[in-house]
Image (cartoon, rainbow, N blue to C red; front, side, top):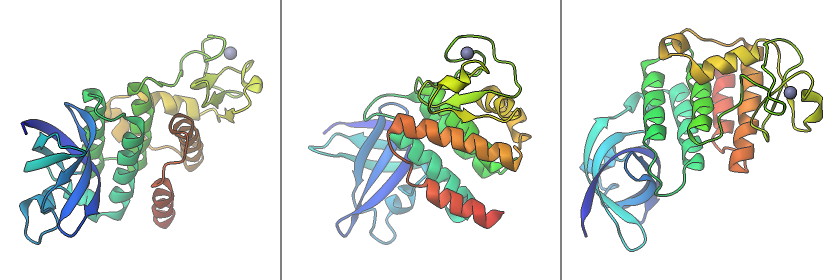
Amino acid sequence: MRAHPLTCLVLRKRDLGERDRIVTLLSRERGKLDAVVKGARKPGSKSSGASEVFTEARVQYSDGRSLGIVTQWDIVRPYAELRTNLGMLARAAYMCEVTERMVGEGEPCPETYDLLSAALTLLQMAHGDPDTVVRAFVVRLLGERGYGLSLDVCVRCGAALEPGRGLALSPALGGVLCVRCSPSAADRIRLDSDVMPALRDLAGASLERLAHLTLSPAAGNQTDRCLRACLRYRCESDIRSERFLSLVRDGEA
Ligand SMILES: [Zn+2]
């Protein structure tokens, strides 16, 4: 079995038998894949700490009969704080699950990899509002995966969108509807006047600007509702870790 070097993030882990672990990885080179980490649950094993969720590492990957096998973990970023701080854990787990749901098996996706890696780094740096990081991540991930939201022109008629009252977002059409078109979409979510500028910032603002962006509670709730609906439409079901994230957010309020 030939081993290939991969740079990867651990999206998820589960136990396999008494000693081993299966990890779902997002790799820069080969996209999403599941692999066995032998001996990962043996006390004191080097791969035990290395194959924790959110870890970024360089590994050796070999194709197996059903699952691949990962050996030689060289940690690039441990992201340990994301596992010990409850607020960070809930947000990182959510972003990893969304990524897992939006990326196909074995499909190289270096841009998506870099986006998730940057979002985890920003989250751990704890600059600014952590929910801004999550929201910007989701908006940009939709764009990376080919489902970018139309925020400059009406997704139905193509008219330029002016921020203001009467706009709505259609998850199925994938963007904002102008005042004239919004009544015609059955799945429309009405947008308060400050939500579309916020969505534009989340989609395109520099990291420096994002670090200073905090949405009002009302705009945040509406933005979350829009993004949840877009993800549900694309993934065809809810994101499981969303409930955990909202419980953690409620506890922070
Ligand atoms: Zn229109």
